[in-house]
Image (tube, rainbow, N blue to C red):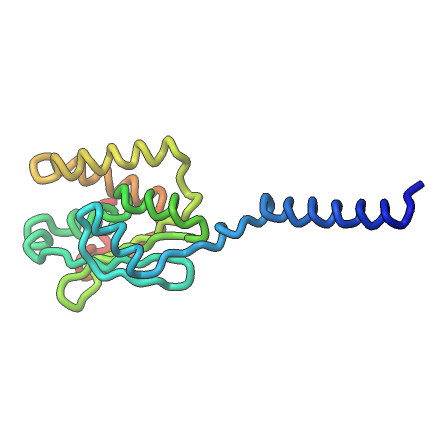
Amino acid sequence: MFTNGRARTAGVLLLLLTFAGCDRILPHRSRALPTAAEADSVFAAHGIQGEVSLAGNVVELRVAQAPDQLRRGGALWARVGPYIYLFSPATTDLFEAYPGLAGVRTRTHVEDQEVARALLLRDTMRAGEWVQANNVLAHALREGTTRPSTLEELVRWGERYASFVYNPQFVPADSSR
């Protein structure tokens, strides 16, 4: 059996092992969130300019959309807007750097009117799906003006993985989905 000294030592070791195990179960970094300025710098590093804020544990990016895009491209351009920013490498970087971040929401607007918004939650896509999303985005950015089908593909991708809301003024209910 244990003597008092050995029992104390065993108890202390048990406590140390318990506390050491807590870091594995609930790591301190799991609550790490960016500030609005930190998130803004991540977007800026990828050439994305907008208004960045935090709503709880969700980063929100508000980006102006060119009215000319909506005049020429109509509902398709209104729908694709938030996904251009949502599936960017900046979102991946934020999720990797800030484990406490639950999601990223992008909102597009023209003047003071919101056009569309989309929210992507952290665990919605696996690593391979992120690679695919980046490819879909790259095709849309490179060929979108000459091949609108690439924009439609990005919209389908976005609607599959993100929760979204379109302003009916820009995306009528009868527009094709």
